[in-house]
Structures are given as C-alpha cells and as structure tokens.
Amino acid sequence: MRNKMSRVFIVGLGLIGASLAKNIKKNIPKAWMVGMDSNPDTIEYALKYNIIDEATASFEEGVHKADIIILGTHIQITIEYIKQLNELDIQNEKIVTDVSSVKKPVMEAAKSLSSSNIKFIGGHPMAGSHKHGIEAAKSHLFENAYYILTPSKPGLDEQVRLLKDLLKHTRSLFVELTDKEHDKMTGIVSHFPHLIASSLVHQARNWQDEYPFIPKLAAGGFRDITRIASSNPALWEDILFQNKREMVEFLSEWIDEMINVKELLVSNKHEDVHQYLDSAKTYRDGLPKKKKGALPNFYDIFVDLYDRPGELYKVMKKLAEHEVNIININILEIRENMTGVLRLTLQTEEEQWTAMKVLENNGYEVSLNE
Ligand SMILES: NC(=O)C1=CN([C@@H]2O[C@H](COP(=O)(O)OP(=O)(O)OC[C@H]3O[C@@H](n4cnc5c(N)ncnc54)[C@H](O)[C@@H]3O)[C@@H](O)[C@H]2O)C=CC1
Ligand SMILES: O=C(O)C(=O)Cc1ccc(O)cc1
Image 1: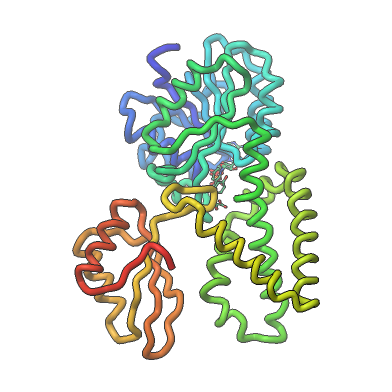
Image 2: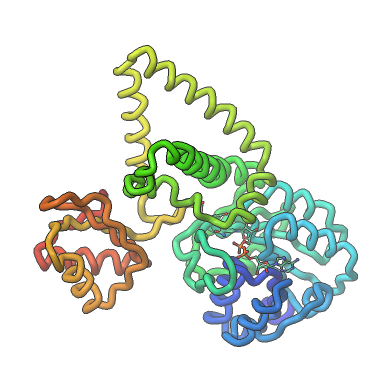
C-alpha cells in the first residue's frame, strides 16, 4: 500500500464523517483528504475550513484517488455505496470502512464485494451528539469512546493495523467484535433506550392537555432520562429499522417486564418493588464512569450550591479563571433558601479534576456523583 494510507476519501461529511476528517487533518499533516457530500453547503464549508483538501462529486473518482475510504453516511446510504463499489474496477488495494451504528446489514453488503483489492473493515465510533451536520463536528469527539471494528473476514490483521494507525489520534479505544455481538450490545445500551426515551416524552405530552403545568415540572430526572429523545429523528429511524430484529425482541421482553412490575404494584408487593429498584441501582452504580459508552458520558461534577444571588456567577468566574471550558450546565434541584445541586459538564477528565480542585479550594462541596 502506497505511502502508508495517506490518501483518504470521506463520503458523507456530517457529524461523524467530518469529525474524523478534522481529526485526521489535524494530526496527520501528510494525509490528503478528498471529500464528497450530497449537500453543496457542506462541501463549501469543508473546503472553507480546510476539513478536506479536495472535493469530488463522483464516488468513482474519490475511490480511485484514495487508499482508504470512510463511508460516513447514514446506514442505508452506506449500504448503497458498498454495492456501488462492485461496479468499479479497483486496481490497487483499498481499505474501506464505515461508521454505521448498526453493523449486520453493512457487513452483509460487504460480504458481496467481489474485488479482492477491497479490504472491508466495519467501524463504529461510539460517541456522538444529538446534533448533526458538519458544523457540529469536532476533532476530539471520540476521545475515550469505544471504537468498534468488525473485519469482514479473517486475515485482515495488517489492514486493521493500518486503519488503527490512521484513527489512533481520535484517542478512542479500539475493540473488535462480530457484527452480531455489536448489534445486540449497542441495541440494548443505545438503540432501545432511544425508543423508551421517546415514549416517555409522548406520555408526558399526552397528559399535558389535562395538566398544563407538566412542562414546568419536567425539569430534573425527566430531562435527564429523555435527553436522547432530542437526537436526529432521520438518523434514529434508520438505526431502529436497521436493527429491527433486536428492537422487536427487546420490546417484547420489556413489555413483559412492565406487565410484571405493574402486577407487583397492583398487588402491593412492596418488598418486590424495593428489590426491583435496588438491584437496578446496584447495577447502575457499578457501571464504569470514566470511559464514554454509547450514551455519551462527558465529565460531570456536582457542586452543592446555595440559593443566593450571585452563587452561580461565583462558580463560573472561578472556573473561567482556570480556563475550564463548561459544555453544559444543569441545576438539578434548588428550592428556596436551600442548597441545590449544580451539574457541570466538562469536556475532558483533566478539566474535571481542575474544576473539582478549584471549587473545593474555594469552599464548595464537590463530588463526581449526584
Ligand atoms: N450521530 C451520532 O451520534 C452517531 C452516528 N453514527 C453513524 O454515523 C453515520 C452518520 O451519522 P451523522 O454523522 O450523525 O449524520 P449527519 O446527518 O450529521 O451526516 C450525514 C452526512 O451525509 C450526507 N449525505 C446524505 N446523503 C448522501 C449521499 N447520498 N452521498 C454523500 N453524502 C450524503 C449529508 O449531507 C450529511 O452531511 C450514521 O451511519 C450513524 O449511524 C455513529 C456514531 C454516532
Ligand atoms: O448513545 C446515544 O444514544 C447517543 O446519543 C450517541 C450515539 C449515537 C449513535 C451511535 O451509534 C453511538 C452513539
């Protein structure tokens, strides 16, 4: 392979494709990035901000120009591009990868690739955002996130090594899984929760006609558990249908479980309900905190705060003085004249540590848990 994969073709320069493009461009100066996107504004933006070196409107041209091809489009479109590869005459060896949230349908399409010059390695960087499009792309989006790789056949060790070499500056954690393992596990921790989050939002909205005050109360826990319902519906429609088998199975299991919980409540089984909540708490509390999972886990700190004028300002000022960049702020609970909890979301573990120390040194009670 020429020049250690320095020519990269990225198709689909949205949130994920452009985040990878930015990361490669920033860290591998010799990489030559060719980009393609169906949206001309995206291409204009990518060129203007040097996210790519060159644009093409032809998939064939991009493929011929590259050693490595990253398909960064939604899953159904990615599958169509994989099929298009079969219509091209591929002269040199090329590594092809994707970023799709569901792997089985992609790997099935990859199995039908006829050219021995195409080495397909499925990919899924497991971090994202509720935003979409190139403007939301960030070079560091995948830091500490798992990056799943699904080689299409045995014997691709050298290509996997080259791909990891290209993507190592994302500072994500590479893990190899089969497509089946991947879709089951991401189905349970990422895809299915989206359905439940959306269902909770629908339920609240349905009750709102009768109780118009509901939105005002839907602040703390409700906002937390339904945060992912604000994600891009076009993306999630694609994901849910591509992983439909798993979704239908999880839904059936969940409905049975809810019927069971309902029965426990109706028949006043206090101990059983306690046990249900307690075992969920034990499992949830034991989940790893540091690494990003499918549900993006930024670096939170929780600060006890008095309900007094200027309190929030004082905290912000201290953190600004130490150049801590706050990416989200929530006041979880604050009642008149009582302490509340301020949740600050930071981008890196280092900032989390700095923020904690700065605030503690200024008399605040800070913890990493709510
Ligand atoms: N959004 C997220 O949080 C995550 C998404 N993914 C996966 O990444 C993939 C892309 O998702 P996002 O970046 O969020 O979507 P996006 O909507 O931000 O980007 C998709 C891009 O593809 C372009 N596009 C659409 N049709 C095209 C075509 N026919 N040819 C070329 N470009 C085309 C769009 O103009 C857009 O720029 C999906 O397969 C998704 O499963 C993976 C991890 C996280
Ligand atoms: O986990 C979620 O639900 C997210 O919002 C971020 C995300 C979305 C899609 C993925 O394939 C991986 C991570």
